[in-house]
Length: 218
Image 1 (cartoon, one colour):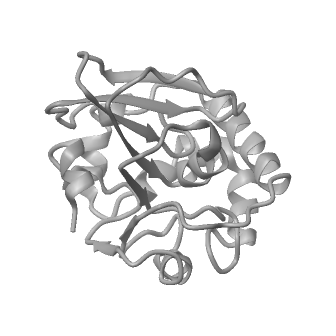
Image 2 (cartoon, rainbow, N blue to C red):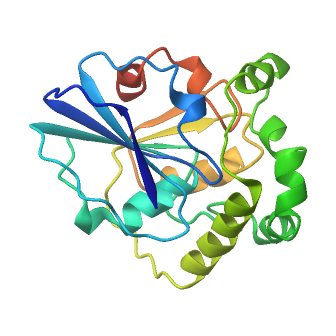
């Protein structure tokens, strides 16, 4: 697992962000930080967690596969005042609560080609958002991203999740075709009282100006 400080200015509050599969920091650097430091984790080729410095207040934002990773590592993470899941569940490959198994295996089989062609286009519901992404795209080597998906699937298969109340808010994009919105709703309607539906695709971050906007989204 890699980490990157999106902002480190010795603020009193830290946002820990677990990104989705195949991402790095490049597409997220537009978000304003305000009075937060922001530490991002990504590249889940292993689940080794870097040491997290001491802050007065911690908030968690997890997206896509990061929702699963953060929950799996929850006992090693600080105590959070806010915990937000975005377009993901703790069961990322699941016919009812995540990506249906057959489409996932198809993605896995053709991951290299998909990363070169359709995957990043498919995470947006608007062409203008895809064009914006292409100005600051992911820079990780494609082979590294393919290996990550294989390692994630092995981790998912070998991890027993017995979900107990953790995330206190779920943001779900209506037009998510990566992790179907109906599957996300199916899980979260029984596991949080705070579901917010977004008018976007799988990557909803262009809907927000700052990290704090995400935390305060209602």
